[in-house]
Length: 170
Image (cartoon, rainbow, N blue to C red; front, top):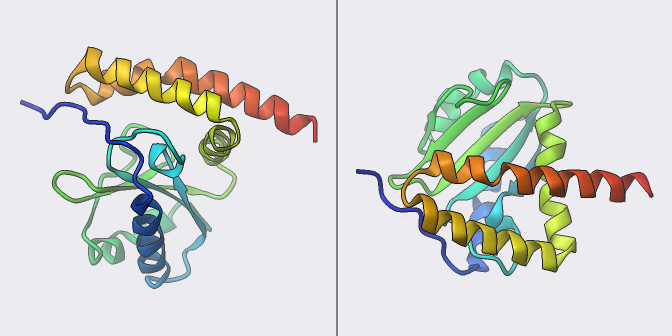
């Protein structure tokens, strides 16, 4: 049986954990353009599953496969696309402590993830609403991370629309 979804209060150390991992990935080589902290652990003040989500923007999509051996030296397991077309997905730890999502520069998922994070950082009321939704869904779906994630789609799509509209006014 799968473990239940557990949300922990925001931990400022999550940023330090990301920074340490970013530096370790940077030392592996120059196959990326940039590395970003994404997901709920990147949003100050809200509860999250204690998994550091990292977005790596690759120079070329094939670099995701090419770096798999190097990522393994950091303890990562390569999981292919992991159900999202164009993604190179890595996970670390048992239970998982880090997820790395790699896309080639220009892939639309990059902007979606960064907009979501930045919008919630800039709008604490939406961040609190997201936390409340996550708590409700964790209670409802217990250990089904798939259903939990799917049930957040409407909220994340709404935030993406708001972020796009806000950015188009600049």
